[in-house]
Length: 101
Image (cartoon, rainbow, N blue to C red; front, side, top):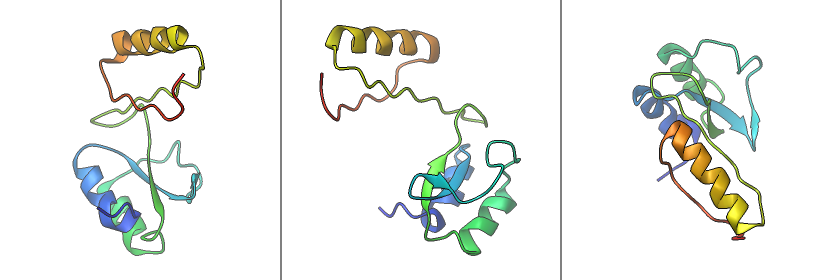
């Protein structure tokens, strides 16, 4: 599956998320934290210069508010404690281990 903004952004918006076009990990649009993200704006971005961008998802806002916790801890017990605390507050989520403790 493609991960380019133009290919997936409108579908992500339809699912209740708030996609943001990125160059690398940097948003392509200014004021991205504050602007209202509408279907029309996502369609505009997807067809007017940002179609080849990466995709970011604005967190903490929208119909399906997305929350993330990046735990960069090398101690396994501490890592689990942070994960468990986050899960109690926001619900269970996906766990991915890059460099395992």
